[in-house]
Length: 172
Ligand code: ADP
Image 1 (tube, rainbow, N blue to C red):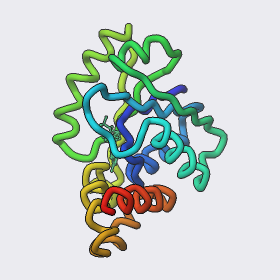
Image 2 (cartoon, rainbow, N blue to C red):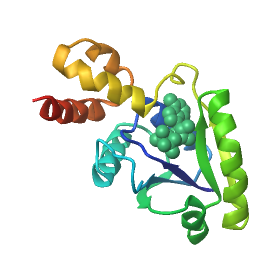
Image 3 (spheres, rainbow, N blue to C red):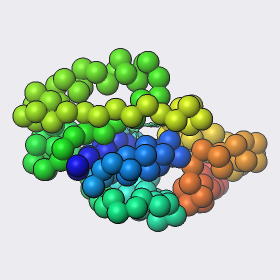
């Protein structure tokens, strides 16, 4: 089974890593695919984001599952159709996620010629984590020290260090 895990991953969090680790129990290959948003500004470049995921996963045990790293522009359905993926993988943190995701899964299936989306419910201990919250905390934590310890619980160590470098530069 080949799964495409699409997202912004700006940056990757412990929530994303947990989804990948749990999928590694049944997937042969997981392809992290970063969507290159034409307008939305990101804190890390696509190359940096892919590198952060790769480095974070190096510290984990994915068994025999192969992990690949890629990026795409345009419609996810087109990217998926060009690949030989079995399914798209997404995580669900809340009913709101489900509500937002459902129409995409229907359109992506129709446009890609039948590729389904598999949803994995978030680990309840990690369902509060989002890249946006991580960035919000990081934007203050390194300047004031307030929230720095809490931030360490939300992201892999390499991401924490990358955030420190990025926000120290931005705040100086
Ligand atoms: P997007 O901008 O496409 O939602 P994200 O990088 O925010 O991209 O998320 C990629 C995928 O990971 C999405 O399916 C999202 O629901 C899921 N995800 C994000 N955070 C978590 C978490 N804490 N637990 C489980 N899944 C998550």
